[in-house]
Amino acid sequence: MNLPVVIEIAIGLVFIYLTLSLLTSEIQELIAILLQWRAEHLKKSIENLLTGENVDDPLHQKFVDELYDSPLLRSLNQEAKGLFANAFRQITHTLSHFYHLTTGTRNIFGQQRSAPSYIPAETFSVALLQKLNIEKLSQKVGELTARKFSEERLLFLQNILNDLRNSLGDNALLESEFKHLQVCLQESMDDFISGRVTLSGNIKQVSNQLIQFINNTETLLENDHPCQEIIRKRLPYVKQMILRQQPEPTVTEVLRLIFEKDISEQDMSEKNTGIFNSSPCLKKIIDRLDQESPELIKQISDLPEHLKQNLLSLAEQSRLKAESLEAEVRQLETEVANWFDQSMERASGVYRRNAKGVALLIGLLVALLINADTLHMMSRLSKDTLLRETIAQTADQTVQTATVSSNPSPDQAAANLTGAKLATVKNAVNKALDEIPLPIGWDTINTQEQKIADRQWSIPFLRRAIGWGITGVALSMGASFWYDLLQRVIQVRGTGGRPSEKS
Image (tube, rainbow, N blue to C red; front, top):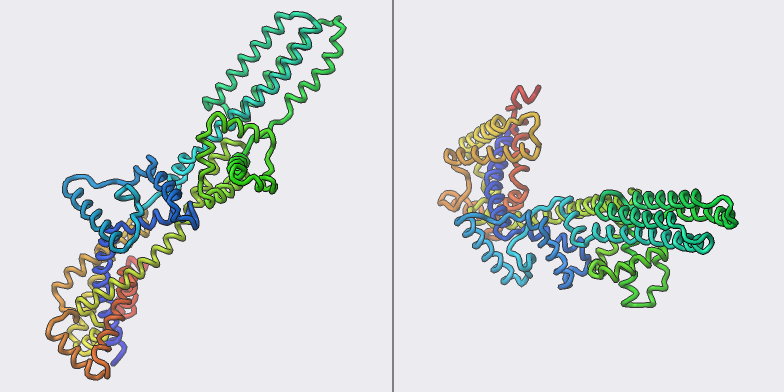
């Protein structure tokens, strides 16, 4: 047997594998759609991402179900429309229910019938932070911080004003200035609540208004009053106290204090471990927030422990990259999206491995049902010159047809090109199958030749079983693999590529 014959046999085998791989791929895709494998695997991966080892906890499963019920994620799940589409979807739900009933597995979708098969990282990040009300929480903490800053310094100025009133008597102008200051401070707070200024901008505005009031007070003092020197000596200290930098709270500190509060309620002994070390001022703000908006605190404190630890780590990364509370919340969205992307990359690898196993089972089943015996196919191709040359010529024409038909435009993506080629290959293969008889099937010729070959083996059907097994493994490789290999083998045979491809 010379080299050209060996290459033609290889082309014949690869072409047959390509033909059957297209069939197995369609079967696997149909099963994946009917049983919603992608959507189910995605939700299981998200459950594992958010809850860790406690994925079977009903409370944690409820948390993920509620996340999936958020408007952003629910909008990604496009249900079927129309009479026939709804009927097909009903069949899908029935098969899925029967599958879970027979296998004893739970319905991962909970009360829903389906779920999205793909979730963008940015959408997941926004949906998760919206469910946790992180932005509202940071807004409330910023608001309480700004109010506390204004109230403390306003109270200090009120004491100064009382001292001035006791020393200088009633001063209508100072009283009017102080009332005007209160109005200005409330306007600054309203600007912050409405989002027109940031927390740092609000603190700066309040500080400037307080300093302006002190300057006005110093101007209005009588030059010959005996208390003037005492008051003048106090004013620089007051200015220094007002201008003292007010550190903004961070999302990390807020989350730690909330988690610490939850720990202290469950086990007071852990509060004294020294794990958390936040400012007493921020602790008072969290306590005040717990009184005004207890639902915000409870929503954060009831999170799965695994998610709490991950949120703290992501919030710490955000703190290092942001300079303000508002910017930290925006950065936290990015960090959560990156965390989701990295996790989904690993989950995709698991899905591909599982899909590989399913493809192997489908390949073995297809090889058995249509009697695709690799050893028998090799024997037929080596003996039947006409069949071998016909398949080789058909494979050559198929490759050329697919290459010409799917010639990409300059801006076409590689993934789309692969899909276009495979679609063209499928059409070309369908036409070719009408013209050539493949050495597969349970017809009389194939079965008689297999029986004759089985006699040379001591164990009956062992040769045929090995041939089916080889075919099943080959089909699990996928149509893309065999199409690429077919191109290379044909080039080795001497057909080469088109001139435009060479250039």
